Image 1 (cartoon, one colour):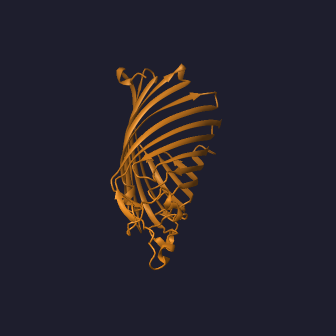
Image 2 (spheres, helix red, strand yellow):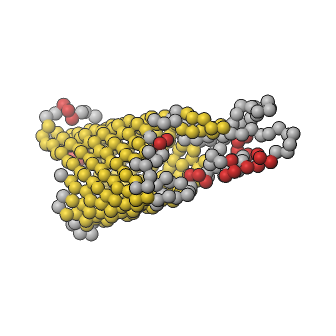
Amino acid sequence: MMFPILFACESSAFDSVVELSAGYDDNAEMTRDARGSGFLLGAMRLSETLAYEQGLYTAGVYAEGQYQDYFRFEDRYSATAGGAARREFLDGLLAGELFCEASLYRDKLIPEDDFDGVSVGAGASWILSGQTEALLRQRFSWNDFRNKSTVYRWPAQSESGGMPLEPGFAGDYSDSGFAGDYGDSGLSGLDSVPEGDMEPPQPYASEKSRDDCLSSTALSLVYYMSPSVTATFTAEYQTNSSSVKGESYDSTGGYFAFDWKPEQDWRCVLSLSAAKYDFDRDDLGRSRSDNVRAAGLKISRFLDAFELYARIDVTDADSDFETEDYRQTVTQCGVSWSF
């Protein structure tokens, strides 16, 4: 792919969007014991697009950030900056894209999720007909987590000098997931060892630095049913390699979006998604599988450069670990200004 910087720039456009909203999150910590809180959210996006050779080449840069202020809990914020270069082929029927970005995420509520990351990738789009378009995107992300993760391990030997544990021994104790409390994790039976017998080993907690490498491959089919109705179907495969056992996984998922503009100033977007995550065994030998389903609805009203919107997003996570089960509903109303 040739880089557009080699050609004279013919046009450019600078866009800015500022957003302010308020809402309620009924499970901000994403746990089974849900605790909710209201919040204020502010966001801003700046982007610049350059066109070359009558639009045959385009390039763009952008920066965006958001800050979420919870009334009951600690705050979280994120920032991203990146760029992309695009080249069209076959009179615009086929297009290729290269992109890269850097990001950071800070969560005072869940500090273990803080990370700095970089991503690179490539994408392609192909107009199959007047109503359908296929999109393919490959993305690689490297995330450096700022805070160490707490991991649980079995000791190499029992305190009484017994033989080292066999691989998979942990599975006898942890069918219901380890919650950090022995009584809740299926380990309570260890307290009832007959006097004079050798006590089974107890897991211990330690901290470990975490670095992840995430690969994502997504294939989408966009169907333009009419000038006001668009349907998008996406299949995605992800694989995450982590320095922390139990955080590496493979996942497959699907996504559907229905975009309807009943009138010029109105827009409704319905989204549905489902994904399955199969995690590697952790240091205790436990396997884990998560099924995550989500649905969202956003209704917008446009008034010149302003967008007034209301949205609701529902997430349901079903896991082999009880500590990873949760249900979350977020409602939100806001306004965005484009200039």
